[in-house]
Every structure is written in C-alpha cells, then in structure tokens.
Length: 251
Image 1 (tube, rainbow, N blue to C red):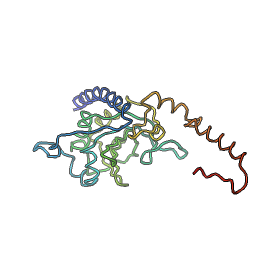
Image 2: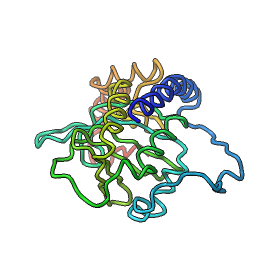
Image 3: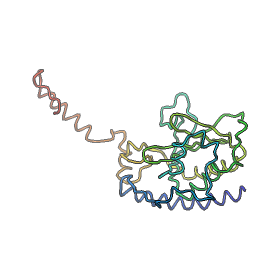
Image 4: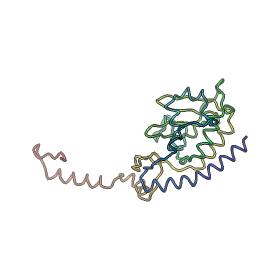
C-alpha cells in the first residue's frame, strides 16, 4: 500500500510541476483570472464513483464538501504552530510558513481518494492522545468560497475548516499516507508573499512576474514609490496654504 501510494504521488507530483508551470503562465497573462470549463453532465455521479466518507461529509456539511468535490483551484500552504510572540502571516490561526504549489486534478484525485474516501485510513472511533502539529493546508476554492483541509504529522490527523468550524479526524491508520503527502508537498516550498501585496486576484502568495518581484523588493521603501512623492507634494502645498479657508480636501 505504501509503495503504491508513493508511486501515485510521484506521478501526480510530476504532473503538478508541469501543471503549476502552466498555471503560472496563465496567471502571468491574466493576473489571476482563469476560466473553468467542464462537462455539463459532470455533476452526475457514476454508479461506481467513489465518494467522500459519509461520516466526514455529514460532519462538515454539504456546502463545505461541495467546495472540495467541485473545487476550481486547490492551493497548498505550509504551516506551523503559532508562537505567542508571532507577528507574521497566519492561516486559520496557525503560522503560515510557505507556499507549496497549485494542486492539479491528478494529485487532487490521489489526495481525496486516500484521505477522504478510504475508510482504512481514518479511525472514527478513537482520538489520539497527541498534540496536533500542522504541516500542510490545502485550500479548496470554488467561486469565492473555500474549504481548508489541514494535515498534521507526526500526530497523524487531518482537520477540515469551513464556516468558522473545524472538524478533526484521527488518521493514525493512514500515518504512512499522511507522511508521504506532507514530505512530497513540502518539496515544492516557496517563500510566501501576501497576495494583496502583489495585487493578485487569486491567493497564490508567490511573485509570478518580474514586476511583482520588483514590487516585493520595494516593500520597505514603501511599496509604492509615489507615496513618497505624494507626501512631498502635500508638504509643499501645505507650506503655500494657510488659514481655515484655504484647506484642500483633494476633491
């Protein structure tokens, strides 16, 4: 089982490397806007099609599960427990330590099949006496909504975040699967940069164009050089104007 899953992961990650490059190329052109096309009958389940385990689906709810099943993009982030004095970026209350790629359809199938659809990898009857150690967050995005799936190791478990609630599942039976997922995805590490800083419409968190990289380098200047120019102009204008009837409100 371990070798089979590792083999599937290897194939999927090779595809991920090509898929991520293609996605980057598209995003560089369209600033994060992509069109998604699918078979109009894709919503119809086939008779033998695997589904998310009922106890997971019932716990999370239809809307949260719909984001996973019908996700249009899946983003991978690296996490760690947040120290008390931590002031960096966070995700669902945890320290955000890196970006690990855009998950393609092949890798999504491997992840959902083994993590959410394989009853042999989840223990619903017992909880482990260990402290959750967040490693990876997979954000399943559908429209403007999303569901987060967090992987923990070596306290092997996964948690699903949706609608302000979190559901934690014991994945000790699938420990090898969790370890393989975590170690494989961490190999795609890239330093995280705020999407808002990059003016990205999709939350990739990695500079994709030279212009965006230059923008990051200027972050401490401040970000927009014209802010300094505006400040100088405002100071000069203030010197020329005095008295309450000469106030300029920028209208």
